[in-house]
Length: 422
Image 1 (tube, rainbow, N blue to C red):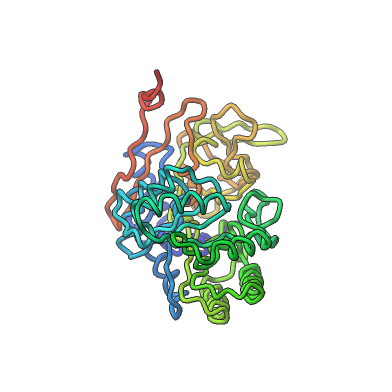
Image 2 (image 1 turned 90 degrees about the horizontal axis):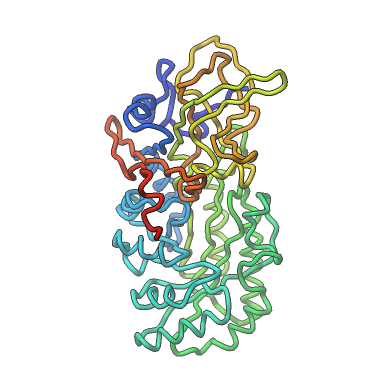
């Protein structure tokens, strides 16, 4: 059954006269000029996603902090900064990227379950907006550096509310068996102990429930639980950081609530709680469907019971299918009406049985060596999770703006693979 690609790409990637285009550039021309594998982004798709997210949460005081881990390319971060968003960082490296792009410190939120002392010190020194606390020991470290730099530091306690969500078990982050957050008993104890801390000012709570959430209910349930917790602890939060996790369609058959529906429900709950500031950390929602991965067919292996299309992109370039069993649409760069299709596994060149981009994908029956395939929804957790496994250089990244394209990351060469080795 053919995918309705409009549901995924919103018109920024489309077929025109049988050829696939990114904005006004034919993708086969990009592949010919820059080679494959190649990540290809749409500038106007990115702007559109940011605008839609902003609109959904109008009406309450909101700080939108893009989740850098989704895609940390400097050019993408610059565009996000120009649109007046902040950033959510989870490592010293991501914090350094944010500072390099000149994000205002008061728009930087530092989360993460394992912050090193030097990372905390850098955040305090640079006077970032706040830290999301995962362990009581973090408070002591923050306090030490806050005293050193003579400033109060805003913190939110990350709560683990043991709420189950409908997503892959690897990306559920608010179940009690996961490493994330504080249970409500620990959080209550910390509130009492540090309520009058001279240097660490606990202003609210952080609640990240998981990734690729398609329904509103987990968010409203979590906020209702927080409301009860606050009442029981006689605490009025100024800040609620709801994290991210807002889902996107990876297929036209995905049923994902519109972000406007999320906005209506969440804003109502924030007003009930009485928080002065809502922090949101979208990553996938912003960049997920703003990019594709171009790959070239190397070989076609036809068997009686299974067909394989072997491409030059593998799990080192895009690990999500191998890691999570994730689905990405895979379509040809060129198609014609009335052609026949066969089913095939789209696999890479990596020496692992789990190296695949898609299974039982419909491809043109005449598919052959040299053809270009497009892997959709490749903007989030794709390049950012790429590796050099099998000593393979990472792909280039290209940004298309109407009929112009820009290299936003050069393709790695072989020398880069051993540049740091002694």
